[in-house]
Length: 525
Image 1 (tube, rainbow, N blue to C red):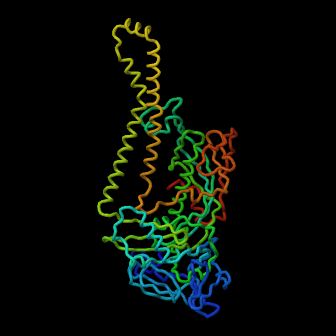
Image 2 (cartoon, helix red, strand yellow):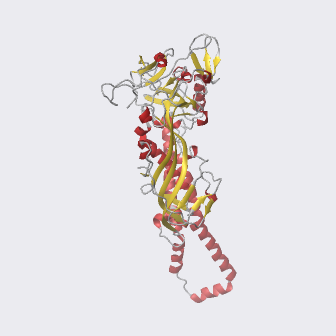
Image 3 (cartoon, helix red, strand yellow):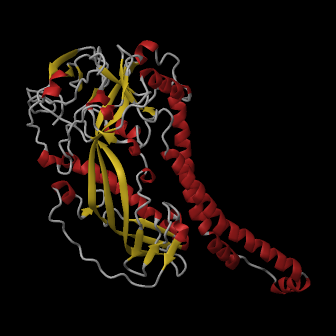
């Protein structure tokens, strides 16, 4: 259910008022409102100039996140400290943000509309953790302007000081998930030329070049993968702001909200099961692709592979982000600036004509990749073609040829060696070089343009290096990873001959419903 009201049902349906809990703390010196200052990492009084460490103020409790769907049902009455908090609701897009009663807002953080109304909170909510803002609005604007300066072919009249002044600091409700991952992976182990898709498609297997159906088990751990719990914020936009440094997570205190807006979650992990596990599955697939099980290449089959997520830990936190919404050339553009790292992301428009030029270049590169694939298939056929040509070639007078061979043995041997080297280069080495180039071209095409929104973080950002990683092929010999192995380093595989004992699947009776959804999933389904 969304956090904005829609009492008549409408697009999102539901009824009732959704709220956030916070507090407007007073200065111990002069009783004025305190505001959290990101530069000093403390609460500041703008009346008397005093600075106060949030940890020295009265502590607040936590509703507990170990089992949020049971411990928090949204029926807790608003506390006395929440009485001074208000909701600001946009009549244009329906977004709700929460702040203290002394913080003013003249526009919506999401759509930029000035059509705002305020109302009192009606129930209580407190997260467990928060990452405080590291810099103020002026610095966020400067980060945005610096990023725009790095984008080529950006329209000159794209932004203005008046538009940038609408940038809004907002704490985003986020579920942070850590979990152990166990994959019963199925795929093809390729030897020799079979690692090249052009060869495997057009040529048959041999004793040296073959594919084998392979079964294996891979175990590792993912740490601190974030999922925003706010429907109004586009998931792709929030993912573009990652990564955050979770070593700076601190226990939530309402003092950190002073001077900023905040959102309340409207989705719990159980509501986002499909979205969460699909992302974790993508990370699991990426790890499995890095493990070759001793073959020259290994290609997992997502339809046959099974994932299981165990020993999960879920934290609920507020993450700092600066949002900017602006209209240009009849289209709305949304941008996000990581309030901790300063990373800027969003989709940027092109100056007139440049988008067509860039698309034409990408199309030409895709056509070059297709030509590359066909060329490799032909080169692999070269030895057979040469052999067939020799057989069809008519030598005419055999006596003259025998006399030529007898009189020029050295030249003939040199010619044959040279012909063999050229054939070997064309049929063995050149296809590998072209295959490597094709991979690089595909990687370059998969990278987002500077005008596009940043891509989702790869598994490298959330791979837990402190967790012992194991991988073994259940159809063959045991394979374990040496101590000190780091993600992506395939050269340190330690091959052993001991077959692993079969493991029995056990069910956790104390698992939450969300955890049960992660047991025995077919990958990417």
